[in-house]
Length: 310
Image (cartoon, rainbow, N blue to C red):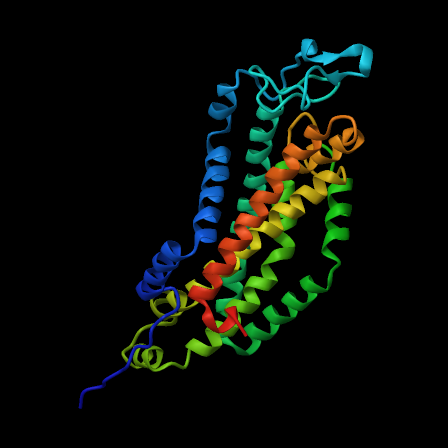
């Protein structure tokens, strides 16, 4: 007797990626989002090289670009925009805004990407374990998810970042933000795993002698890949905004290390006299969050259609 098994299409498989390419050709907004994401990703990877194009480092002072008799306001229109300073300069210090924004992108996006990676790895591991093994494992992990999600995360982040002194602030922010983000991914993955572990092809692998780890690697993880990719893309904007909020509140990355949130906080005092100082990091933050949000919405609709639209 031959055992015949029907393998259903797996979310995130080759058919889904054909759909992604088709949507890329069809949606102008998706093309624009990918272009913006690629631009800021390149900025993150090559920040020193890109800032060097402007001829200024993020910590270099140019006192000749500010007027000491006007409270240190930039000389020239639009916050000191010129051939020498492409986006203008900071008031008082005269530091080049182009270099500061580029290096701020590196810090802000590095924290967001690294924290997202921690969240995804921890969430997928916990969700797959809870959904597949069930029983006591599911109970313990589910209660841990509930406990973590019950904390007022932003207040707890502010408290932890405030009491930390002589530590690497970037690494600490990555760990703190990652600590509170994994339960959301774990719940998505747990639900998907519960729906997959009794499918015919999984039962066939189990009857054929495959162990639990082999089944998880070959049958379960590919099935949860689509929703996880979509959820991850939607989660990155939240991570970027969280880093910006913590830096804005003064408990994140500290000077002289630049970040977008820190720059926005410093520019508030000059929004009426030097609006470019406020607009440049704000527009960068807005475009990045918007691009990742649109990209995440599109991937969710394609890779996880049941969760994408009601």
